Image (cartoon, rainbow, N blue to C red; front, side):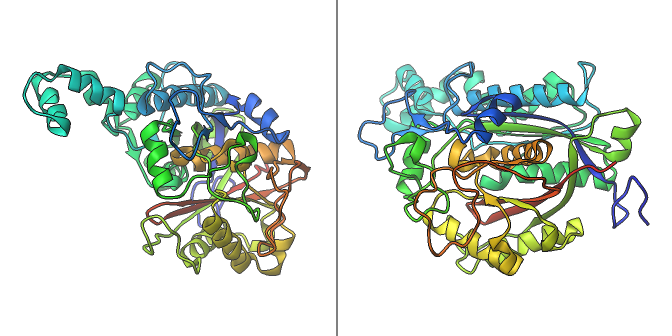
Length: 424
């Protein structure tokens, strides 16, 4: 039985009380929203390493951050620290500690080229190549390098700094990781394990190796014009833009947030997930896993398709994903999909990979609070096979009460979230 603190299933209502975000558009909610709502792109030519000989020369880097070193783990930590601090400050938690656990969506981490070169320089044996790297690694302790390649290092550091409770949880579900972190926080509160959760996602993986790997998959755009390269749902889309970003959200039960007098940003109404075993990198052409994840999310939120006012699309700008997502949305929403605004933040910030689901969650709540739907920029050549209202090129004033946000990842990881206004 529900009351003012529980939902239709008798579960605790989950609310958001703090948010933080970093993307190539800037650091913090204010800088990001100002640029996003104006249709500004954060994509630029890569300057942190040489792209000579590569087909892709652009990315959404966060060169304004000051990490300990230029590596994916260090950049990811720097952004995660910034967004966690911003979210906790908005939620009203001081330095005495956060009353719940940390759920962290972690990027894949490994020794990067500069670390391997350092190891090779230490090698005094007759070994060569990868064997020499291993030999040098064995001969010295290399505590810092060891920490860099541990999946849990960033989460442990954030948890220690902000005094979260219990062991922090690190997870990686490819491009749905940010949504998965929010899902884990939500489910922990529903289970009664905690009254609050800090959910953070961060990815600073624009490195030479990362760029080359996605290039070899033919996943990246080869468009040389940075601000014009990400073109979700356009006929001439040719791949995604690899980008960096982070987001953090403070989740609480409504009862806990109300008891401490917190300002409530919005409600997390539902989540749906469905694995896709079709291919390691491609989505199932029939869209069934994506369709199922969306339907599960709507059912979990106790909403009909008619009650969704906006879809924050996965919208990667790859030919296959955009077609699959468009067809899947039509299967879920029927003819009404022509009337529902469906835009892609990735047209401006690129694909923030591990962080995407959390970044888009922050932007979804800002869409509701600001009564403004961000555009899909670069929509100059519509795809006649895609029937969506993509909010082309300019933001749109609109009051939206419920938002569906999609995250579809490599390896068949699909997670969809439903966000809503808080109506006291």
